[in-house]
Each structure stands twice: as structure tokens, then as C-alpha cells.
Length: 500
Image 1 (cartoon, rainbow, N blue to C red):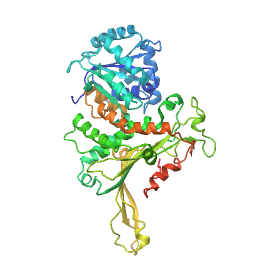
Image 2: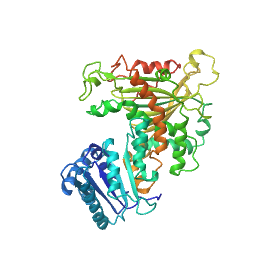
Image 3: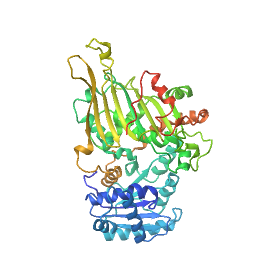
Image 4: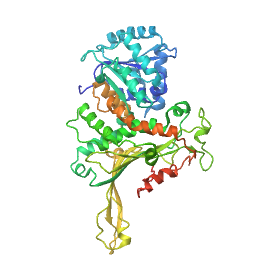
């Protein structure tokens, strides 16, 4: 691993797709504007649309105008567009890969990229095995460690369950070494998610309290006010549990719960994250799954303006697919024994917010004597706001002004936007940069992916055999289904209110 991105060609499969337009090309352009791309760099797009280089550049400019924080500047765009190229063809056609090979050699000569290759699979997951095989058959993969390097970037989902994840990993392992594979979870590129490790291990005041003795429970929330946005086919196949929990939210949980790594090297961090996944308490049987999970599906909003999930395009009118899930997880190790980690995520909720809330234990004894005073002393809560308006807050009790002893609750808050002038980098900016410089800490390793599926798959299997009888069970624009409230109420706890 080097500190600076290395010269390379990014070979982008699915170059005209939604992910490229919305995320990847805006991130690459932003890196160019910030001066963070390597001086010798180029993008070779591959897709089915019959485009030439200039047409591809025009399409990508339109994408950046739509999805960059600020529209592209003409001079900046001209210097960036000069490194964009395109080859049209179908991924089943071996001649496409012969043409890609020729284009790569020409780009190497023109841009001095030294033969370094970064393959990005921004396609449907069903295409991954075919693309990996085609790259192998076209002899485009350098298997030798060192230079020139060959790296593979793969988008989630990494399988549909444990068996399919193992099969996909086996396909990839037949062509690429594990240290060449960069499995992307864009949540790990978000500044506040990365800051979890800095907050924990860069501040002496937090780590001594980060355990079962001082923490009562942890809540991890990813709420979205939007629906499925026309992705009916995808959502019918995937559902909320595989779409959000198996990857994004379990990755966040691992950063919150992991032991201190020996260093900030990639595998030192990933080793500790994998330990968390291995320590997740497995479900004993189907009854345990039902007791520790809650699922829901949104119906029409109270005012009738928002349609229900079953009314969305390409969705089965009798679909049993959940759009909301809440679950209770335990980590069976010395640090966390007995501390519940509550996870919830869903579509068409009242607000869009992603956060981690560390709820500390209640004070052991109230000194103030008055019941009405003591009842207002809420436990301290450390809130890590991941999006929107990234922030870190700490709630604590204070004396309210006046001659009587009256207690109020205050919030001390650090906001990224106020402290650091300017816009935060896009998540894909960090991930693309790290892949170019060979730093894999923010990417999922094979063992952690499979351990996460080992925890999630029993839920999928139980839900398949015990279909819901009350869907839809929450209105679009609400806080979610009653069963999620009951999940915490059985433990004498409540969810934090959803805040925009």
C-alpha cells in the first residue's frame, strides 16, 4: 500500500448504468477537481450502448451536471474528459474483451498508466461470474504480486444468502487473489462512519467506558423517507434485510463493537471486524428468530398521497417482501456480553436519517431526593449522526436555572459542516482513492462477508417458512410497524425518535 493513488486505468463495466451516472463519475470528477486523481489516469468504459468516445463524454458530463454538488466548470471538464474512453459490446462477446485489451494498451501508451488495472463491476450481480471468467480468458489479470497491479472492485450484494455468497467468492477466488479484491460497501466511505474508529481510539475519555459495564444498549438506525424508486424487480428479489442489514448496518455494528486493532493497517482492522461477526449470537431456532426480529411493509400514507409497496411498479400485489426490519443482536464476548444491539431500517418512514446511538446506563442512585427531579434525569447518550448533516452529539444532565434543584437534559454537539469549511467528500471518492492506492481497510473481506451471511441467512429461511399475515402493517410516512416498538418495549426500552 502506498500513500498516494498510483497511475492506472479504471476499466468500468456498466459504464452507462445508473450507478456510474449517479455515483462513480461524479466522484471521479470531484477527485479530479480536488487534484486527488493520479497524474497518469484514465477511464475506459464498457457497456452495451453503441457510443463513441465523444458521445460517452457528453453522457458523463450530463451525469456530473445532474449529480455533482456543483456543475462542472468548462475548463476543468475538458481536462477531465480527455481521460474518458469507451468500448461498446455485450459482456458475453469475447471479441469485446479483445478490443478492451487493445484499448488498454493504447491508453497505457498515451497516459503512461504503467499497465496498472482497476476493474470495476458496476453491473447486475448476476453478471459478476461471467465478467470474472471473461477477464481470465482474455488474460487481462496479472496474478503476480507487485507491479503492474490488477485489482477488482465489486459492488454489493455479495450473494443472496450464505450458499450463494460462498459460490460467488469461489468464482472470484478462481481468478483473483483475495488481496486483489475490493468489495464495496459505500457506507464505509462516509466520513462519520470512518470517524467511529477515530472517536473510539483517538480519545482517552471514551474507550474506558466502551463496554458492558457502562453501556446499556446500542441503537443503529437507517431510516429512509423514499420508497423503492422504481426498483420493484430488485427489491422483490432482495428485500430490506439483504439490501441494508447484511452489509451496511452490520459493517457499522462491527466498527462500533470491534476490539482495538494492533495498527491501522487494513488487515489489522478487518481481522477485528471479522471477530465481531464471529461473536454474533446465532439464532437457536425459528422461534428465536421470530422473538428477536420484527418485519414490516409500508401501505398507503394516511392522506392517501403515497402508494403502498404492493402498488409500486413491478411488485407482486400480494408480495410478502418486507420493506422494514428491526432486530436484536448480541455479541457474545467479554466486552459486550448481555448488551443488546438494536438495528432498524426501512423505506417510506417519517424521516431520512442514519445514526448510531450509544445509550449509557442510568445513574445508580439519585442524590436529589425529589421523585419529579430524578425522573427527568435521562441516561447519557452518544449520538453519531451519519446522514444527513453529519454530527456527533452527547446528551447529559444539567441544573436548570432557579433556586430549586431542577434537572434538565442538554445536548453538546459537533457538526461537520460547521467545523470543517466546505462540502464533505462523497463516499465513493474515498473508496475509489483507497482502491487506487491499495488500501483495503474500508472494503469487505471474504471471511467477514460469509460470517455476516451466516448470521442473516437463518432469518431469511425462517421468514420464508413463516410468511407475514398482516402486511402492509405501517403507513407510508410513519415511524414503522407496531411490532418494532414492541420489540424494545419487551425489554423496557424505546427507540430514539426519528429526526431529519
